[in-house]
Length: 397
Image (cartoon, rainbow, N blue to C red; front, side, top):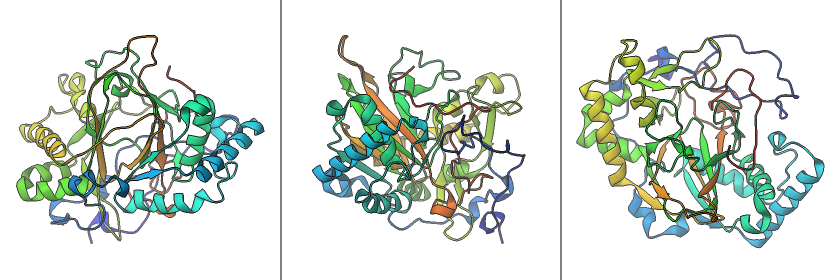
């Protein structure tokens, strides 16, 4: 039996840091962070499926003219329930980083969110909520309601070295050409198709750009099937553990500045689904190491795979526009997403602003069985630097 098909749980390659201090981590959970895969669980290409079937394989034309299939407008009762839960949480004086299902009660909405979570993990993998009253509630109450909603879909994880568990996608004037240092979400540049370092990503629109900043998403399983027919050579290259991903300095003591992995790999055991972990900015930014001969430069086959993967995603993608008060949730396991470049309104109008959540879904709670040591940790993935405490600011810094 191939290693990736074994049912044993991965184990940590090192000792964890011991008891979690609630003074630092108010919910008692710590983001595990980025790690290399378990290489003996990486499966050779010949063991991958010839074709993927099921609800995770969808085509844009199925949804383009049928927004009711992927859009949910909050009812007034649902807004009232979110409002009441938010007011109770605010009155408790609990830090926002301590929010959880136990202190953010949604007795009626919970059942719907449970079904949605299953559809995100194992179904089409995306949803657009409309009608979230951000302008009426303001940033603080909106953040509480948004994070509270998110706790029913997964466990929030840190998104950067600063410990941000409530992220802010906003142009801070950083140089988007400095891709070895700058995270693109802090600029107004185009984001190519990618997946974030979490199981689910959420985006709440607080303010829109003057133009651009629109969203595209694609089923990576539809992309897989298309490549299997059109470019099996590219697909094979994407499954090989020859890719290096930059960590842009967001490392704990003793960790490497990059990770060697594959782009597509198989889930362990039972379902053996194809998981895609990809961000071209993190691959192209490694010149400082390849120029020094520390890691190999991208081969011609890898350069071709970069080009073909992006072009295929663009060709097969579903376009989506987020208005103020819209929330997009999508799976990072089998959906890739992108963003067009944008231009903000002139001051004093607010800049484009999205609040972002990264959510983890451990395997013993229905998440995919990933070939990483932390597959069964509640806050698997994300970015954790040493004992950096979680932070939930109400705006970008």
